[in-house]
Amino acid sequence: MHNQPKYKPLRETVYYPDMRSARPLVAGTVARGQLRLEPGFYTGLGSDQQPVTTLPFSLTRKVLERGRERFDIYCAPCHAETGDGDGVIVQRGYLRPPSLHEDRLRKAPLGHFVDVVTNGLGGMPDYSQQVSPEDRWNIAAYIRALQLSQSATIADVPEDQRQNLGKPLLPPSEMIHGKTGVTGMEPSKPLQDGKR
Image (cartoon, rainbow, N blue to C red; front, side, top):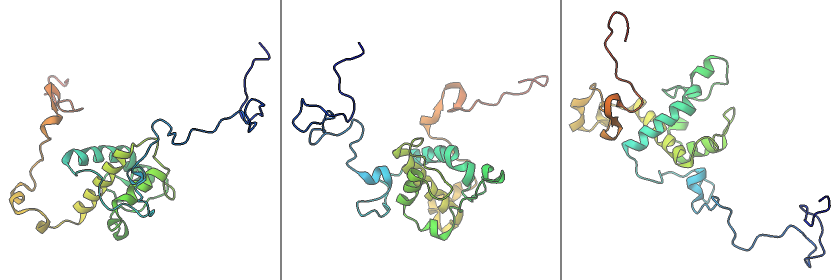
């Protein structure tokens, strides 16, 4: 059993004319899960290595809600929920990121944010393993909505929606489930003798 017939990686062999035991891949071979026909979707950068300027799918409320959820998990610890760069980690001494409301970042294309989430920048590590490509775009869309919310005026609100300003926004029907109401939230119960 000590001398088994096998080839060790990169060892020479007399079996093949080129003397290599490690065989080259067949032309056109693509590793499973690695075929990326639209590299801009995965990196945020187009074929010219410039940031992509448009969202690769339709912008919906569901996209923004998912973007907010992912932003609150991965981005808010440093950038804060408001995007001003004063998150809880920063308050404990970590390097302060730039505010997402700076003019330079307000003018940045969406692909810039996807690229930064994918590859990291400055003191920010990359999140390519933690955040899926689709969620990177969801986060970028939410960042843009967050930026717009901080500089919006009453004129930016459609006239038919102005009467709803200040009223709570109801969750979409797909988020309402059974007794718990909004997904993940327990309804409050009245106190009885100091107990719930």
